[in-house]
Amino acid sequence: MKDVDSDLLPELYSRQELDKARRRHRIVGRIEGIAAAVAAGTIFSFLGWIPTVLILGVAGYLIYRFVLKPRKSSRSSGASEGDLT
Image 1 (tube, rainbow, N blue to C red):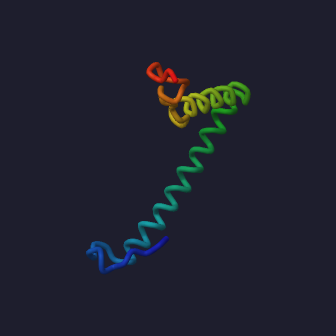
Image 2: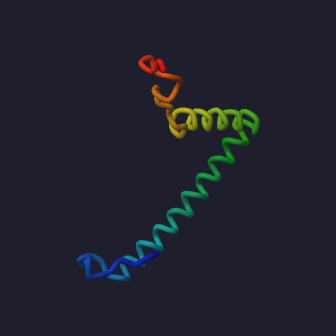
Image 3: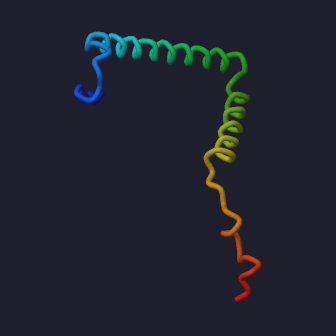
């Protein structure tokens, strides 16, 4: 992680406190990742793979369709009514 120039920021926390917070953050992130993997494994074992994959596929398509897909403007589709040349 890139350190910030200490002249620009006030000394709110010591270097030891920052290192301790980073270490805790890594540990908490790993615990959350393990919990998510266990939860996903439990869901897969109860539902089975085929329905779960289908649900994830539909959810992925909907996210792509409504969130990530670029919108076409109305001007770019065909010639406009005022453009008769």
